[in-house]
Image (cartoon, rainbow over all chains, first blue to last red; front, side, top):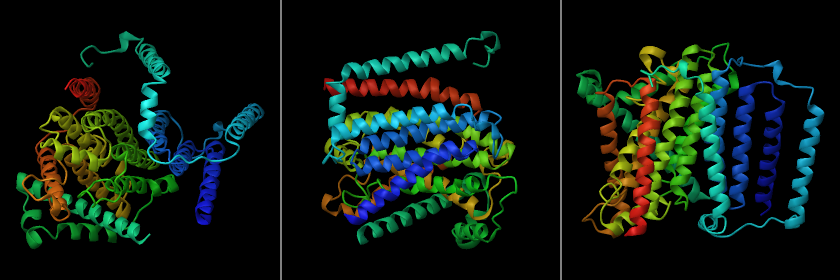
Length: 172
Length: 323
């Protein structure tokens, strides 16, 4: 048990240092790769808490799709290879610190208040339960969220394809 | 602990050897279809070829250009390799001969396989080369587009098998008596194979590499051992995706008319035979088909494969509930 705890502290240390690196580095790609490690380490934390499904969703959706889209976005813009001084924005540092500090306090309060600072590791399979709850008790919010996502998707397409004159009818 | 180490060792051995066998198959298939004498007749009928290839890459200098983003450039092949080896850990060779029979097996595979994309993209970006950048961009567009039909094709199998564990999926096919490719998932199988070929970036979907127009795409600046890692990973990925396809759709380690109590002995042979047959089809496609155009590739994914796989899910779900 002792070794296990030491491992967890190392993971947390890595998580915090990579997370700090995401916002402090002035190289966009380094920030994106640090974000990959941050997400991977949080996935490992979820695995330790035996929330396998959440861990895998984190890897599939965030590392596999969101970060890939980030990288895609960086590549199609003219971001310079190496350091970019414009990435540092000094104006909003105070506001950023205030917001992140208040979010940290809020989350800590919720976690400590509800779980008494104790970690409950679920035993057995939680995925089946999760699916069942999603499609019975939470069916309405679940459907609502998918509807909102669909609306966002259609909105994105309408915004992106507004200029019809530029589209070559033979090519599409 | 020892058991875990043995399993990891065996895993790396099988995955690497699978990659080498597939390399041999690809090169020999090419020379057989295109009358190239080298890999067919030279040196132990061409079987010495992979050894020569590996020796060649190992003794080459590992050149790192001055302009590249060094840490990113150096680590890019590692992501690709890790995702390939981790993928193989869930493929069952028999009910017990598997590194980890996860409850979320196939979901794990789909999640981990996306890690390789990061390696390809960062390789393309950090090389400080326009060919690499173009290759990386094409790879990104392609891998995003074809991950969806790959996942959606698997959903049909999961609905039919009522489980995501790969051993569970094979056991369900044994219970049914026919593999899923015959028992209703033929469209799913075809979509899976097309999407998997695109994920492997093989012909006819090899635009990210496209040697005639992009030199070597995202791998242009790599040489020596780092290039070898990309090269081996490509075949490892091909081997593993074929193994997963045979497990999901072709009954995996199960063969009819053989006594089930001996499955630990014939299971690996059966699975590898099915994998090799799928691999041979990919080789035949590679050496007889031209490359797609970029817009044709995107159209195929978004306008044909994804709608068809959604219909496949719908039909499978209706059949599941109705019968």
